Length: 104
Image (cartoon, rainbow, N blue to C red; front, side, top):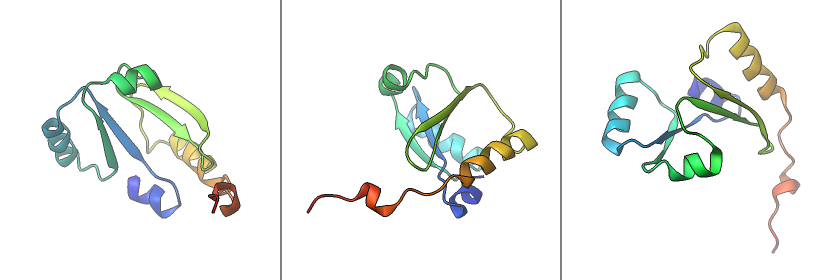
């Protein structure tokens, strides 16, 4: 799914928390995940800042960086409903380049 989304301009990022790097690497390999993974070993940032205290928690961030949804619990990401959510997110316009310009 990560490569399908990336080809359409969206990125899937996984966040592992309260796990060791070795366990995360092994799990990624065993499950064949290819998405980028961020690691919060203590779980402090993930829990305190984002309110995640148990996996899996999914946040949807639109192309403009706005949080547009949150789901807790396992989901079938290949189901018709999940595909519809992804399609709606991919239909949102990309932000203009000027919106993110930096001062000289």
